[in-house]
Length: 179
Ligand code: FE
Image 1 (cartoon, rainbow, N blue to C red):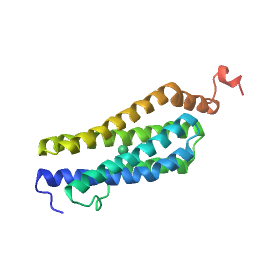
Image 2: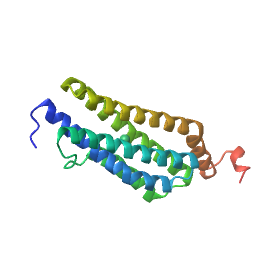
Image 3: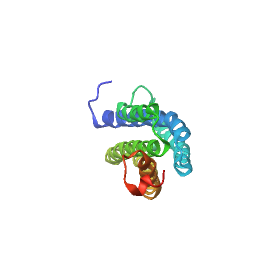
């Protein structure tokens, strides 16, 4: 489709987001299964449920526009998810895997926050006030998820990842004594 107008750009952005959310819906259960921290697993599962709501909001918007949400692949999120899949294939120790998966999930959230922010602003500008409201609701949930992940990383997952790594370090006496 030729992208000539702001409306075209807006619809393309919404399609990109729709594809992103579909890919995230598929990836999150795999990430939850691989995660070793119960709190991280819960965060991935909760976000999967939220993501269903994000898809529903986009469906509502596309219905209003009388357009199909399909026909575009979000390469940005595809790339981030592939990086996570690569890490899972490498199969690092659980604590390290968790830290990597968590960081990947935050990359996805930031991608979505940027895109939902643009889409929301364009919706306002184009006079789609209801869309802007729906997009803002999803944006708020993506931000909350990002903040939750930051808390999990700082308070638990990153520290545990470092502890998991410790025995493999060549040696400080402190850690050597624990072996
Ligand atoms: Fe989302």
